[in-house]
Length: 107
Image (cartoon, rainbow, N blue to C red; front, side, top):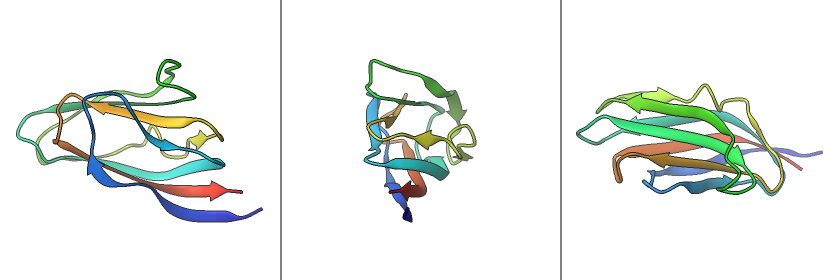
């Protein structure tokens, strides 16, 4: 067994559409995830882990992040993403919320 620490999602803006931010090709554990609202208005973010966008199982319900605030995603920290599953996310505002996650991949 090999455990590799890596960035699961490099820092980028979340979309207003639900998007697979990370898809596991091996069992993966999320160690840290942060959201930062760089916009001028409150933003709300929802995340979940599922096999497809239609098979939603909410892990982090809509979280409000005020302008200039950061949010450590304790709801997804420690969660496992099995092979073939994805971490999905969406924001209420495009080009406002930056997301980054790190973790370990176990092969």
